[in-house]
Length: 229
Image (cartoon, rainbow, N blue to C red):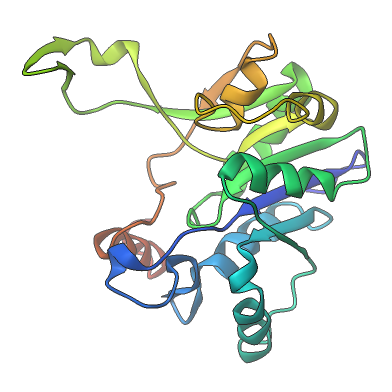
């Protein structure tokens, strides 16, 4: 699908390979023959061919990304921006690279390559209607709230697991990110919500996992091989 109103995606790709027992940062680990970060970018480009892709990387990874692009002959158009000390600062740097004041932007984790075309389209369409769209899924496991040495059960129906892409009208999120960083900002939705905006939830996807461990990578590989589709 193509859109007349500008569409952007800021792909946040910080992180390390520590939980993979790898010296290679996890976003650069291969997923079915190419780095998973490239798989993530492919998903957005295939969903919206005229989307503007902004990749935010730690400064120390810029040279590595350039080398990987040449090695894998990666040709998806994108702009690379240096990240900051926190995710808030990294996303802010990505937003500052967008000249448009009108349009929509999705913020997505670089290590969520299993995102579907349908969820990408749904997020942008819902944001166009409501000003923002945050994908969530139900909690399937039982939950307990810990208070010191004690714990109590809580109703899992009252909670949702938050995913990305978190999608916003550019005018809304740019205004929100003009404020100073706060430790209470756990994601982009919390930043926008702090300015008085109402957050709108949409249905996410259970397969839209954040790949942080070797076990997650095995799930992703099974997906690409077709056994989980």
